[in-house]
Image (cartoon, rainbow, N blue to C red; front, side, top):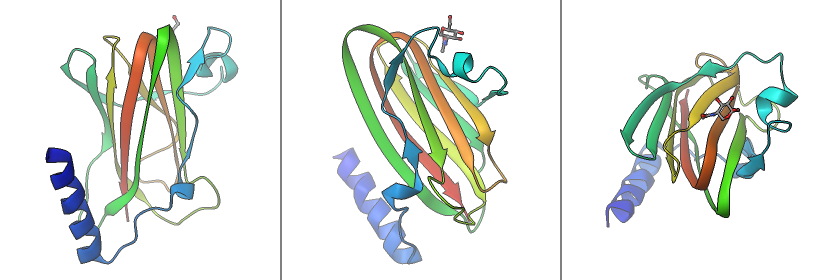
Length: 157
Ligand SMILES: *[C@@H]1O[C@H](CO)[C@@H](O)[C@H](O)[C@H]1NC(C)=O
């Protein structure tokens, strides 16, 4: 019920503003991928500086990562959702990159990532670009988890 309500509001909002939603192709993303210490992002990219996103734990296994703030005139440019379960606990990572191809010219104002997993903890990092820039790369991590679900919202103007 709540989900339907949110979907309806989202559609009304996008019709009212007359702005198209992001094409799926605007966001590049990996599968929710099991990693080892040899294949995790920080091992493959030892020179990349990770910037931790703001992190709020709402309850066990439920975390919201944010960066930046909504600004007047911005709009939702990416809404992406994925989830995966594993038969045994895995260390997992997801990498998202906006835009997937050539610059869209959109300046990013706010990034929100809602994460839900069976493990207690997760990490959310910006690895490239970010707020005030026209590109961003986002890394999500969680160790020894049997499930991982996330939804990403990126706003800009
Ligand atoms: C997962 O484990 C790796 C390697 O021990 C560690 O560097 C990383 O901080 C852990 N991530 C989380 C979210 O706890």
